[in-house]
Length: 552
Image: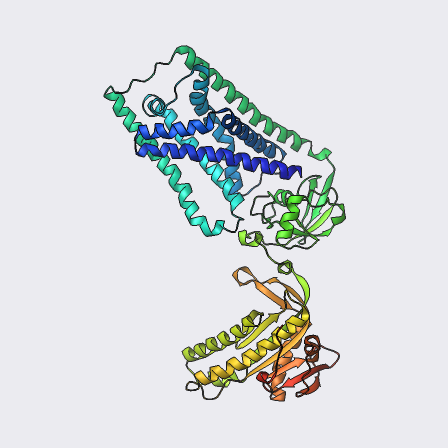
């Protein structure tokens, strides 16, 4: 709960600071019109931020955000992190140096000496009198903007709407700092011209004012530098004393064993070992890509926090699955990362639990063209591809409208799954309905292709139901949901046995029993299936269009 609370403070304090920066850049952009436009924009800007509430909100957010950055850095078990995380962290450490100069030269001078920090005066200082500070100010804007944009991206990219709007948002985060810089340049040129022509007289700064502001700048810089040095000294002390801590072992399926301190997250353990581990959100508990299956030591883990539970429930994960970035084991643990290291944002979306592997009872359908080789050898390659694509389209539509899922096309064959998220009865009825639609579709296809075919296309269909292992299997772009198991082999064998019975459809009696169908007008048989000890009772159906299936 504590980690989640700190994470929210860091997030929303960052949002406040980012909002301030956005408004500041918008104000700078008005320089493309005129300095007067910048001043009018500044009046609104000051009204919002230079009141007691706005001042408290801004500065408390800034100090809270920076403090949590330093605390997080001090407590990290390893400094290994993604490019985005490291860029964000480095920029977060650097930009306060420039921010101190900027704030003390504007708000600080205003509060201490009632200095009128108008755009005219600031543009003169940064563009004419002390141009090096103008360059520094521009660099500061880039650092703050990149840091904040990376943070917002890490947060928002898991929102469903974000991917739909990303091109517009990307344009916005590029255009706004560019227009702000151009507005600054335009305003700087205008004030320089006014100064050279005598229409603008810069305020005279007393030595006391300059010395006082510089003194406070120096003190603030030293304090901040001490804080950074303290963080790294703290890390060095922890590293030197690490052997005094009781270590625990995190084991992985490939034999890797990592010895770490208690309180180290599994994700940090992976990084300490240099072991690639998916983590799209950077270990903030916002995605689920770092998820692991705990195979040993689960009983020693604390219950998931509210934030972790929300993520686990969102993606429908089972009780053995935890987020590697959220669990801090106190005893030895054995885990299996469930996603490849290069997993993307899509992997963190709401996916059913069977994606990671599950045993489930489903109906499996295989269909194949009878003697297609003899048809293909008399056709040109183009004609073969055309006919097959029409056939696949017919089969695919039959499966989809029946509520099934195409597993794969194999040569001129089709494998389909039914009932992945339904009851066994619904699965069987859907598979039988698909068989009927396939038969009707083939009749229609033969009618339309009668001029192109020497003889009509005939198919064989086999349907069986049983327990299978479901999961997202394959490699790289070829991964998809598929099923493996004895029931899959049985359905495939039934499809091929249609040749022996001169039939179009063979259905196991188990399918008919679960579907609560009695097909008395069709032949019942017992067949031996390779790999099965007992004969299998089946129903032989000459034409799948002859069966009547009630609605699910």
